[in-house]
Amino acid sequence: MSKSWLMVLMMMMLMGSTICIAAQAQASALFVFGDSLVDNGNNNFLNSIAKSNYPPYGIDSTRRLPTGKFSNGNTFIDYLGAWLGLAAPPPFADPATTGARILGGVNYASAAAGILDESGQHYGERYSLSQQVVNFETTLSQLRTMMTPSNLRTHLSSSIAVLVFGSNDYINNYLMPTMYPSSFNYSPSQFANLLINRYARQLVALYSLGLRKFFLAGVGPLGCIPNQLATGRAPPGRCVDYVNQILGSFNQGMFRLVDVMNNGTHPGSMFVYGNSYAAIGDILNNPGRFGFRVIDRACCGIGRNQGQITCMPWVPPCVNRDQYVFWDAYHPTQAVDAILAHRAYAGPPSDAHPINVQQLALINFSS
Image (cartoon, rainbow, N blue to C red):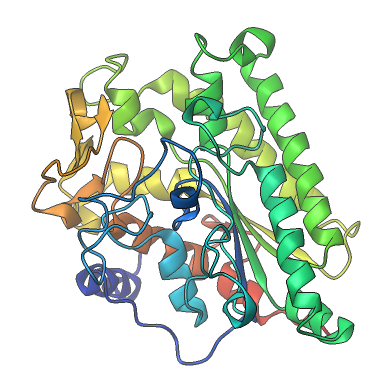
């Protein structure tokens, strides 16, 4: 990592909850699809137990209040949007997300959501990937009343879609054999193929609806999150290797999927794969380089590795939050999200394949 890049990342972490948005927008809008890693409040409006609308969530946000983000402050989307010169888009489920508020994009992400409709169903209501695509169509219906067909095509083609899926299909499906039969019905590679095929189907749907620029985040090393470490299945100082190993098929499939989508069958578009696994792995393997000291337990949580029970209402979190990789049993701190966002935006091909988000934003598909 270059010294200049490390300086940028350190500055972002020192800013804390203060987000400095680039002066000029590099995209028309940001449309966000995903799970709790990027949910910014949709589940607040759903009948779900997967919520973060209570303290200490949001303790480092601008107003020091919970907003529905599963973080101590900002998320990956807040930081990526800032690099793109865009404010983080509002949650789809908020009744106020209408009219001029949707022009800069909409966030459809929902905690506990998966690529498969059934993933995370034990948490209650959530917008799965397929439902989020349907919700995007609702937004399109509103945009059609606000723009001419030509202007809407241009608007969508210069927008960026960010998709963050897959984690719940594992930790809230495949890795819960007492509640879901998927691990009995599919080998790890078969399950990964199932996920990739379902994912591809929805990407084609979003392409057919007019989106042209896509950033698809891979799944991080779930075997290293406090929730999995708390199972006691990892040797001291190690992650749960089995969990990380079974993710290989999915992430490799995502890498190949991007290449397939870019092979000319979807003209006038570009799909980018974000290597979340390697980026987070780099942080975990070299925490000191990034300013972290605690990598094996949550800042807010209860039990072994502070990961047996995730962050509960009013539970005091750790004080030195920017030195922790994990905020709660499942999610990173905002300090980690700042690093991941910059690597997605400006990183080399090992971070973002075949190009990064900054390069993606520069492509003009509207001409």
